[in-house]
Image 1: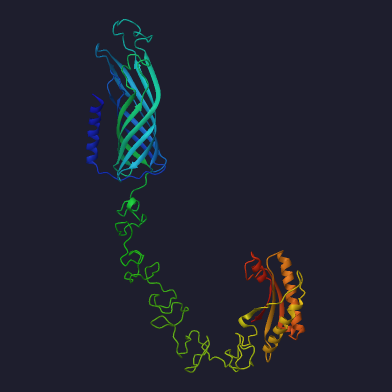
Image 2: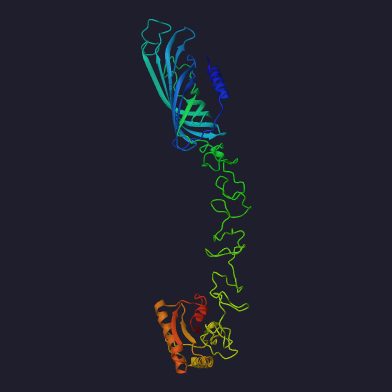
Amino acid sequence: MTLSVRLRSAGSLVALAISAAPLVAQQPQAGTVEVNAGVRVSDVGIRNFSSVTSPTGLLGVFLTPRISIEGEISSANGRLSDAQRGQRTLSSYTPIHLRGVYNWPVTDNVTLLLGVGAVRNEHRWTVPQNPTNPTSPVFPGTTLQVGSRQSASEFSWATMVGARLGLTDNVAFRAAVTVDGSGLDESDIPYLLVDKRNYNIGGQFGVSYLFNTKPRDADGDGVRDPADKCPNTPAGVKVNADGCPIDTDMDGVADYLDKCANTPRGVSVDASGCPVDSDRDGVADYLDKCPNTPAGTRVNAEGCPLDSDGDGVTDDRDRCPNTPRGDAVDANGCSLPKDADNDGVTDDKDRCPNTPAGSKVDANGCTVVIEGGRLVLQGVNFATGSSRLTPGSLPTLKRVADQIKTALQGQSNIRLEIGGHTDNTGRAATNTRLSAARANSVRAYLVKLGIPADIITAKGYGSSEPTADNSSRQGRALNRRVEIKQLP
């Protein structure tokens, strides 16, 4: 029987079995082991050795879900035929394959197999009688004894194309065609390898069992794992086409967990599917106009604390619950104190209660001495590397002293600071010491001009507070300065 006939016969049997059994998706993973048993039809390309059918076994290990390594062995026993003389002798062909295989899923349940590797071809045979001299003890042209067992083997390349068809999560039909190289010829095995071609062809059909495959529907929700976007759904929960629990009101909480099944669309919900009530006042956030109500506070239908006296301070914070209507109140719901000097700062906060009418005051109710809170003393300079004021600086400082004296009239709580600043040239510690010394020189001169020593301080900032870019000469010049600022 020729190879093509045997292949067609085996293929028909496989096709019949496949048509009778529904195909099932399989999912090998790293570590999956495939064990296969079946039959192999071999054609070794020898003129007087017919193709034979023999058992075959295969063992494979998956390195990744698509890459596997496998070994296969089979043994084809047959008889040599000499058509001219009708003599027959036993012979065997054993291919041993080792190959890497790429497992290409064509569909969920059909995987194309593409393999390449090596094969060891082993031939064993019994030396036949001399066809021209049956009584001769040796085969003509050789020293081989008639009836002796001989063998020859080789290593060569091997290829494979096949398919695996899943029957269950672990069981599959497997069919493949192999084409292997062969360099043996009649010089290696006289009489046997007559007119042998340089390749062997085989067909393999069998059943595989795959250990350690990943279940295709692990949660049993009726949606196969490759399509299941929620693979761990609890048993018995209704799911959609994606395998995820149904969420009728689309609030992100599945119906089987949702205690508030009719939540309006777009409303934030908690783990129970109920609208979030962050302040726990009994009014859901999407209806709550006062979302940060303290715990335990009584609220109205809008979730806002009650304000019985209508002063704008809710009852839970109102320390003066019976404030007369119309009174301005503080954060505690109590009437605000008076402002005796009408400077805009109430008496309880006014550090300078007798500010002259019309004076501009700061947050403490004191006259603003320095407009903007800070003044760079332009024209105040020092000898290089020194804290000694130059003569040209003195007129500027006198004008500043006169301005401060005017602002101090009737004031007792004004505080000023003289700040010295440098550029970033030199060491930081040196710059800090120099800037402090220069600030103290300015302070001492202002005190000498009549400014009370207890309202004015001096501080050296070094190069820590630049006002310009120190990378340019102009920027460094702007950073070398003395400032006076009014303290709060």
